Length: 403
Ligand SMILES: *Cc1c(COP(=O)(O)O)cnc(C)c1O
Image (cartoon, rainbow, N blue to C red; front, side, top):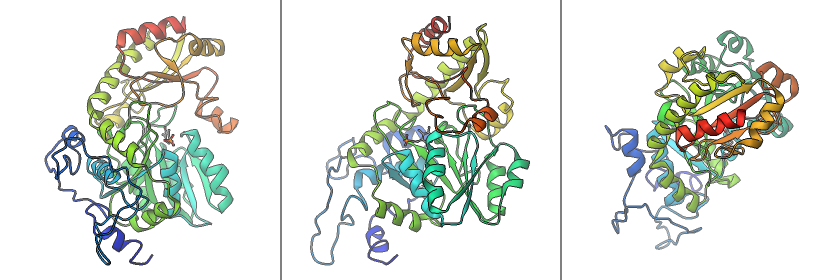
């Protein structure tokens, strides 16, 4: 890539090539989330970071620039969001995209035809579809393996393995992988580790500190938190992968637009309170579900009976609000979807509204039957994203729905 398209364009704007990670040193996540990276507007004192709803930027004179030229390359509102997320995550650089899938598709530009990728076997169905339906056509090779099992992982590397793509906790069966040991295995084979941190967010889990190279988000979920904006992010530990990814994003044009960037800045301010309260609600619901005679299994990483509870306690500072459970019959699962009133029967997760989904046909509809069988994703499994309603109301609703 030549100077005019990267260094020159990026070099003049603080943060485009990476942030000052010491900025706001000593502040906790809540303070950074509320005040942002630059924070209030220097020119006017506006508390809310300005929305630069502009596609292009005028140059003061020949050879002079404000640093910005065109919003596909850089936009101040998007940059403030990216820098705030990079600071929260403990990364050097964040890139904001129009969706989680847009972020993941750009991540794959690290690879070349003939490269091999190891992927969590229990993962978001859309990611599976992108990999297996789209990118296999371009000569990339994917193996879906149980990355929560160190022996399976060690045996799965190939000489051309360039990327390990991990989702933890897994979706929807809530298994937990040891990020530090997956990072060590990936690096010893010369591969990059990317962790999809959508379920817990940096508020509860910091993959970069555990050795990951890239953190991936569907920002549509907890980072947005209100079921009203699609967004995605890549957060890079250091500058190693930046030029390739920046070049890819700038060429593909799948960045987050200014208005949605502004909405996401607003969303982030309440990340901590939302997650804490959603987690409290989830714990109450898990207790109720475990006591329900029609519920046969409950999968929640914060349940002390969960097989990976010890690992979660070591690796994360919280457990989030994603809960899967099985009822005793297929008909009952369908009845729950029909009978819920406060909880909504809808795809997605992480927002203020509690949602229930049916993974078998919704989020995981693209995944082949043998893989679903192996993972235990069956016709009795339901997935709950616990929101911010009153916990007693939620429990009452679920109990009447389960019947
Ligand atoms: C939703 C989701 C994605 C995809 O993100 P979009 O914003 O819907 O494109 C990726 N990974 C996980 C874990 C998700 O839940």
